[in-house]
Each structure stands twice: as structure tokens, then as C-alpha cells.
Length: 56
Image 1 (cartoon, rainbow, N blue to C red):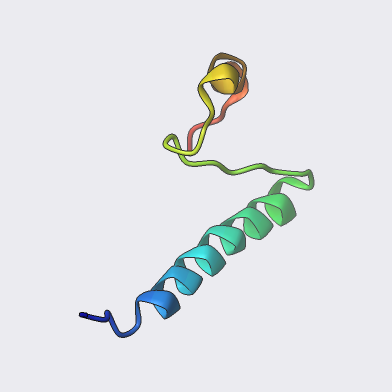
Image 2: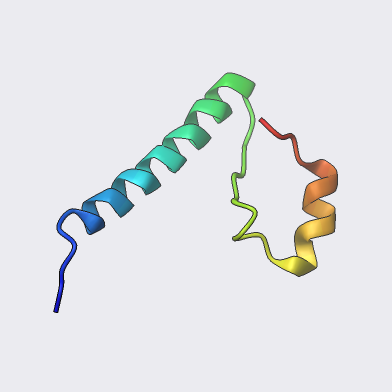
């Protein structure tokens, strides 16, 4: 069995970075911000979300 040292730490860092971006944008814009990756966006919501999305 092969283990990947640091993979759990890397996943945590990626999550913290994503959350940090959300907080930064909320502070900058003064409003609630929801971030989502294209891969995570459910198909039944895609059209509505893309209509309101602001690509940065």
C-alpha cells in the first residue's frame, strides 16, 4: 500500500485557500459571495447560476 505524505495537508490547504478567497471577496464587495467550481455545480442549477455569475 502506497501512501502520499502530505496529501491530506494539501487538501486542507486548498480548502483554506478557497475559503480565504471567499472571505476576501465578501470583505471587498461588502456582500455575501458564493464560490463554486464548474465541476461542483449541479446541472439543474447551472443555467440560473451562470446567468448571475461574475467571472473573475
